[in-house]
Length: 330
Image 1: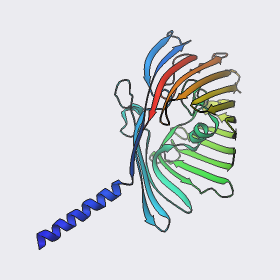
Image 2: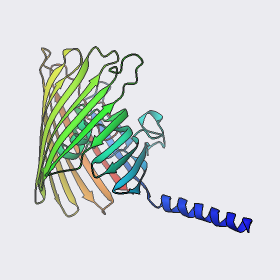
Image 3: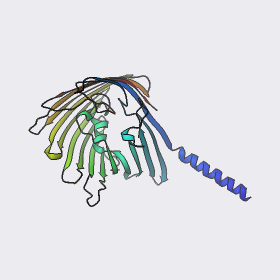
Image 4: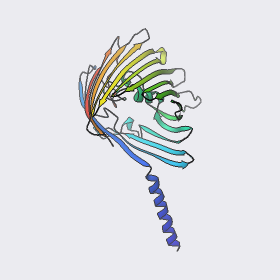
């Protein structure tokens, strides 16, 4: 009888594990392309690269209903280089994202390595290239992509408005301001219109100075077209100052998508290291999960500016880049 009871208990535990696992999703992106870069100090470069359109990744995410509208959630995302099989993000196990949190009717709070509100705004609202391919906005605008030790709170959307507040602990002994990151975004979305105001602050190692970036963006969709605009102001370390303007557009019909953008970087210091970027891309969807891409980006650097044309994974080596490749989502 005791043995029979034990077997039933074990079966119950296994069923519980299976039920919990049914709430876990395994997903990823396999992206590889041929990249050619010109205009760099070392000359032209051609290579097979990983994560050109979107960083190649393998992820796990899940959600558990705790009752009364409360849920627990997590996400673990590993980046890898499909061209060599090596780990991305400097070899970190879950270098792309790693967080856990709770969500309910009052919003969601999460803790871990996460995307900053500034980066999310750039990727999702203003950049037609979604921070990938030659010509993405992060070639010129500092996206401050991921923040370690971050606590993030996102409100529900009410009457079109929503807020996102983040704090990244510097974890330096004796002074909590060292290496600290602060971020916030306020957005309004109603039908085809999305307007977002975001701010990002990063303290330096001894808290004697900080880099601050403020950005206002707008996206408007009508039929097969969407238009994006952004204006940003940077107050960087050691007195660096600049203004950035972005104008982008997307046209999509059937399997065809065309992307284009223009970025103007206005250096406000005496050095006047301005830059202008033009970019265009064509995507052809073979299916809902697989597409082919062709992208071109060029930066006109002035007065010693040294911005390079990168893609979804690499920062690039020259002021001109061309990408052609395939991306599969699973």
